[in-house]
Image 1 (cartoon, rainbow, N blue to C red):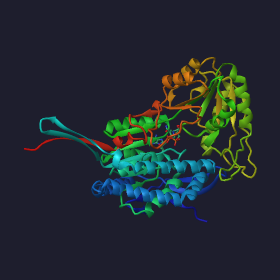
Image 2 (cartoon, protein in one colour):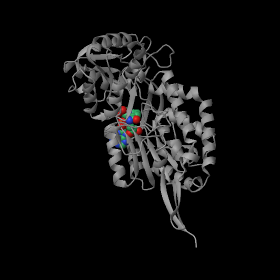
Image 3 (cartoon, helix red, strand yellow):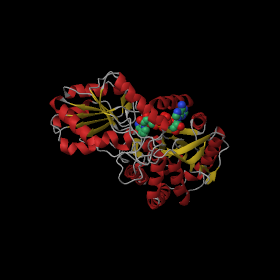
Image 4 (tube, rainbow, N blue to C red):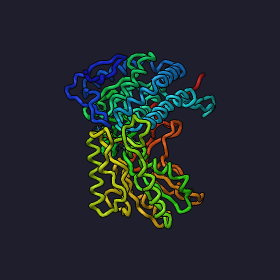
Length: 484
Ligand code: NAD
């Protein structure tokens, strides 16, 4: 049977790219090829930008409430196709179906939040700044914006930006990750149903060439990027050079501290999910477990015992607790980090390397893996592993946990389990990462709050979603006026 080939969506139509490079999309649980994607070119980007520029003329004059009504329709279409989108996501990315459903739910929450445009896009006014003179600030859309997405959240991440860009009157070009093009293709089929004016949203598949064409394009006003830190830094720099607005969210090395007074029974489920949810392939995943003082032995014992029971397998099965790595290349990378941890002298207390899943001999599986006695200087305590590999760094005090957090190269998220308000306050106050969880293992992105890290985990000043995103997608024009 012929494999489906992912097409670009430009000016309201599904079109083939003129590119010649083909990507093979495999189901990571089976290694079976399920689709192909043609990597787009600068020419595809040019066509998408021209369509978006043309659409902008009418779209910016469309009243915000009318624009919001398209989002209501988009929400309905996404709800109707919810299960199918989630299953597509699991098939190409590997995460378990419940995680895929949760991702699509979070994605839709951004559509819902963006419908608040009629309040969230308002400007402001002050009468009589001098006698008989009034001043008003209007938020205006700017033109064409673009988004570049990573492989680990193929559904949700692009929608941290896209609904806000279009509801404020801009038009959009999205480039999904070339590793997981099927989910957004399925989502754009829903967009296609709702009858948005042609060219308001466009999608070009591909990799670096498409990104560089976006960065070079003079008619693109701004870029929202999510991915690894080296790419985020590159995007930020290039946007600076070409005068574009930019928000570039990068990688992470998140630490979860556990105080001796933490309620361990209550904490364990979310603690374990923090490290092994989405097989550790999320920017908010716990990576270092930092038990404090006398709690350490008990925490490690119970954590290991719970992790051992996680059932690894095909994400589409309702009985699976953890899916595969998204690609064989990434599996090799994670296995490489495990080897490095062993070489550097950490104690491997749970080894997920030889993970066999019955009926899935080719899948990219690695089981829950835990290193104890990791020191802050080891590579596995410094670099982002992005897999189900836990590094236990035992700490004597809360201050030591905070120091550990604030000396990593990343500053995305940090969590603390404790029963003490005093400890929690100190933690919230002192840690550098911008996403903080207290008795919560994942400081999750809420559409109505901003999302993004600090330091090398985010370049740019306006984060994803929340109220601030309405600033990213608008320019404030100030009018000062007097009438004789
Ligand atoms: P990646 O940086 O390899 O790729 C992200 C996007 O950039 C893709 O669309 C890719 O095509 C493009 N790209 C890659 N290399 C490029 C280059 N040299 N020039 C131009 N474009 C390039 O990231 P990934 O592997 O897809 O995603 C995993 C990473 O994303 C992890 O580091 C993870 O922490 C991070 N992430 C961060 C957040 C966050 O909110 N901070 C969320 C999700 C993922």
